[in-house]
Length: 204
Image (cartoon, rainbow, N blue to C red):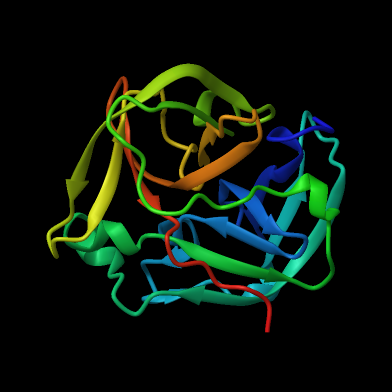
């Protein structure tokens, strides 16, 4: 858990008890799925100060912890129209303090992966919420589109509820890890769709 990509992955959990996966793209910037933080009863997102990020979480232990101070979600995302706006289902969290060093975060890939690209998906799934469960042998099977015509990366990785917010990982020719996007939609059984990280938010 001290080396990439696992050093950059952690559990996003809220004061209300909800849990998802998140990952670091900067020492104090976390990407996760927007729907994890939406409160259907109020129609609003949970307050930043009620969101915790536990880096490299495993069975109650973690490498670092911080609360969020700010959330950015695209105004184009509508949780009540998930299928139509799924390509915007990502939230960027800014943490109160850095929780990693620059060598413990995930570089963001540019553009979209080609069909057949080898990828890895790792997150805290519903049945394995205390440890990261990863599928190390899956591939990109296509580029799909949400109802607004925006791209989603389709993969055949094993994924269940709870994997939302997990990074879709790849490797560069030199062996370094990169992240293609944020897991947003998991199919029943196998496969899912990922929001590309072609535009990322950085600390002001």
